[in-house]
Image 1 (cartoon, rainbow, N blue to C red):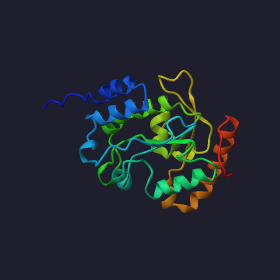
Image 2 (cartoon, helix red, strand yellow; image 1 turned 45 degrees about the vertical axis):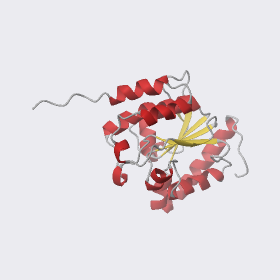
Image 3 (cartoon, rainbow, N blue to C red; image 1 turned 90 degrees about the vertical axis):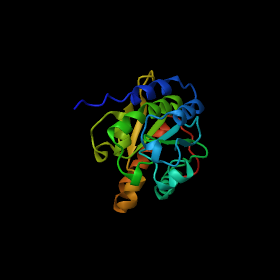
Image 4 (cartoon, one colour; image 1 turned 135 degrees about the vertical axis):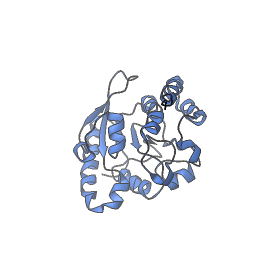
Length: 217
């Protein structure tokens, strides 16, 4: 029995993403893209929220039920926790944060995305990061960290460290830091002390690179 031909979705996604010169164009390209099977079962595309020229960008994993319903990332319980965490160090999506996910459509039942689904989405999130070009990139959870940093290390080994994220279209790598995903912290509140330590480290780095933070820490 012959194998099916390899999917052209990753190459198609790369061409569409690379052709976008603005976030609005990238959003439109994503809406037109039919190469990810998750789009067939999701209610809508969940692209981004926040300020497009923000100095801080947060990237998570994938939309959940609430995000799929509302069309914005991080609006459920984990998103509310994320907002409180960011607010504690003077950051928010209304003034200085841009938020997105690696995956733009909710996986059925919140299952992990397949390798094919990831490959179809990665060109778009990499292009989004390139277009925003934040002073600091926050990667929420191990999935986002491993996908964008191209590393196999677990989140506990990566969290709170000063890292870099290099992408082909960037002349210089971006400053990046990994944090525990808010959904994980809701399941394991005893690890919030680790998250607080990471927030302190991120706030200090933000000050060093000249990011204006509001009231908070």
